[in-house]
Each structure stands twice: as C-alpha cells, then as structure tokens.
Amino acid sequence: MNTSAFIPKNLSNSVEKVSFTWQTPSNIALVKYWGKTNPQLPKNASISFTLNNCHTTTTIHFTKNNGVKTADFDIYFEGKKNTDFKPKIAQFFERVQQYCPYILMYDMEIHSENSFPHSSGIASSASGLSAIAMCLMSLEQELNTNLTKEFVNKKASFLARLGSGSASRSVEGPLVVWGKHPEIEGSSDVFGVPFPYKIHPIFNNYQDTILLVDKGEKVVSSTVGHNLMIGHPFAEQRFVQANENLSKLSKILQNGDVKAFINLVESEALTLHGMMLTSNPYFILMKPNTLEIINKIWDYRNKNNSNICFTLDAGANVHVLYPKEEQKTIEIFIKTDLARFCQNQQYICDSVGLGAKKQ
Image (cartoon, rainbow, N blue to C red; front, side, top):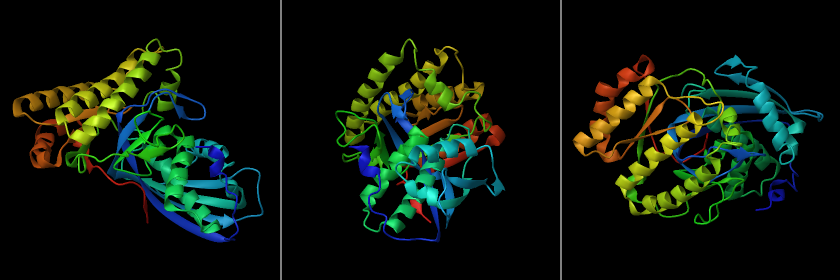
C-alpha cells in the first residue's frame, strides 16, 4: 500500500474543542520481531495474541490554537504530570505530522494510565502509543466524517507503528500479523492486519497469566536491543527462521495442533533471549526466577499431560499460556507453585482480547 493514502486530502469540518478516550491493549508476540530498519520497519514478520486485561487508557483533550510549528502537548501519567515520556511522544508526533497535519492546529493534554506496571516487559509502549493513535484518528474522523472503520484501524496501526513497532499489533485482535509475509494475505510492513484465516476454536479464548517476576525498569531497552541486531552474527538466519515459523504457526492456528503450538512458541521465546545473549554487547533480561518458573512449567506439563506453555517478551516476566478448558487446574498450580517466584507474589490473569475500545 502506498503510504500517501494516509495523508488526509479532505478535512472540511471545523472543531474547536473535543476530547476522546480509548482503551487499547498490550499484546504478546508468539513469533517475535527483533531487529528493524527506519522508520520502524521490521526485519521479519511477527504475530501476536491481543490481550484483554493488560491495557492503557488514554484521554486526549484537543483545543484549537492558531497553528504552531511543532505539536504542543502536556502528558499526565497515572494522574501526575510526566516529563520522562515527553521526548518519545514528541518524536512520535514529529514522525506522524505528515500524515496528521491537523495536530499542529491543536494544543493537546494527554492523560494516560496502565492496568499493569510500566517498562516491565508487558509492551507498555505498544498499548500506550496505539491509544494515542486511536485518539488522533477519532479527531480525524471529526474533521472528515467519510472515513470507514477499516481505514481508521489501518491508519491507526500505521501511526502507532511509527512510535513503537509492536504498537501496530495493538489496534485489533485476537491475532494480529505485522510484517510482509508471502503466506499471510494482506500483510504489510507498515501496519498490522488481523490474522486473515479461520482460527481453530481452541485458540479463540486462550488464557495468558503474566507472572510479574520483575516490575522494575528493564536494564536494556527494546530500542537498544533492536539496534544490536545490526551486525549480529546470527541476525540473517534469525530473520529467515522467524518467517518460516510464522508459516508453521499459521497452519497450527488453523488446525488446532496444540502440541506443535507449544513447541514453536517456547522455541521462539528462548530464541529471542538467545539473540540478546549473543549480541555484542551481550545482555540478559531474564532473572533467576524466570528460569525457575520455566522449569516448573516443564515439570508440570510432563507430569500432568497438560497443554500449559510459556512465552517471554523482552523482559523477565513470564507469560503462561493455556487453553480455557485447563483454566481452573492451572490457576491453582500458578497460585500454589509459581506465585512465590513473582515479585510480591503478583501476577495478572489475562486472556485473548479483541483490540481497541472507545470509552
């Protein structure tokens, strides 16, 4: 798709003052994206479960001004004015200005809060930036009432990607593919698309319990980690592997082979962290309790013929994935055996969700 289609041609309506609130979810990649080129284009395709309970709720108050050279905004995070996030959001507004020129005509007051700890490996930038993108698109809809829902979601994913690659996968659900892939119809490097094929019923209400092993800031940010893939000795092989795994996972999601799902998803998680271990400089985001949990999950699965498995994002926390039919027994296992490895025994019970919701 030619991205010029996202440059507005007709903004005939006038709006002096308006506010919008969106709740957008985080997502957890099953096939990982690690490595990119500017502007936020992936080196391989990825696919993620959209989450339901881990989300960001963002309100933007727009007030008409006389036109400025750069987007003027204040950001409040969880009730307090926040300057730490300002540079990233300012960069985001600069990147999207060509596609959203109307932001220069408004002063913006942004209020945002998460249902989960920030910067702990639950993709807070994904939910946060997709929420801002949805608010911008709500404003664009006020200025041009002819926009379709399909166009709004596609452009929101495109805009969100310019702030955080994984944010492109937080607009829709339950499964979203980002990155051009020959076997995924409609897939693109510039926005995420809903998985276009019929999903086996077992994956429709999949559960994800997120074990909060470490709620602190990551020692190495995802941005730095992605950049370390430049010149990485195994990078090219990894990009090929990821695209091949997406081909395999596409078939698994359609045929319901849960055992194959377990093998592929856990392998992807460990490969992601293997790329970190073999970067230069090398780094480790897993904690000792991350490994304790992984071993406990493997032991439980073997002893109980369970379909429990894990995945990891770029952090120490563990996403425990399992079918809805095993929810009761696995939640007991988590409470009695795994919670002690979490910081303050905290974990979040989540499940597959359907994407952004206007509030």
